[in-house]
Length: 158
Image 1 (cartoon, rainbow, N blue to C red):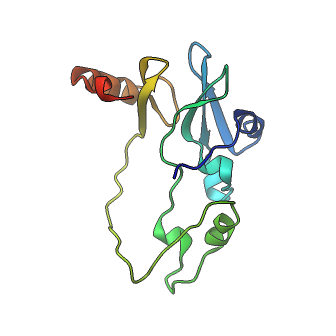
Image 2 (image 1 turned 135 degrees about the horizontal axis):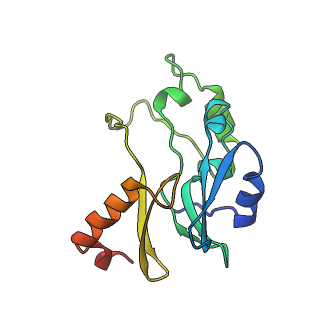
Image 3 (image 1 turned 45 degrees about the horizontal axis):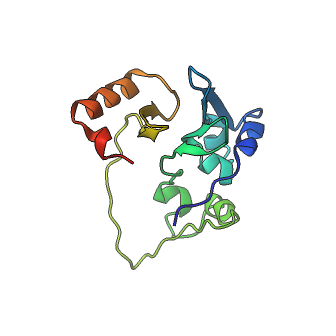
């Protein structure tokens, strides 16, 4: 199930504070939001900040047109070495509809997290749009868009 996002007006209101950066596309038809370092270090996670990883909204009607994964957390951020909930787990548990879960007896996969850029791509208003989480235009986004176009992948995106 895809989580329903708060309305655009709530993101814009929060962008006046320290939690979010707000960036408009060059044509000002779209706006995107990215949480700040202040949010990370002060653990200011809530429904808005968790869903501010480069989410792109159409300004004219407030619809979210590009949506990356919501913020995810590392295991050590939610549980101590003795498997006790951390204060971050307790904070996240208060967000309606969000339940951080861990089954110590269940299956899991462990991966290395490599540094890089999060590119967000999709067909927006009939055109391929590729952005990074923090910018509408960037070297990484332009490279990814060229790579997708060369392979015709945009023809398979809906």
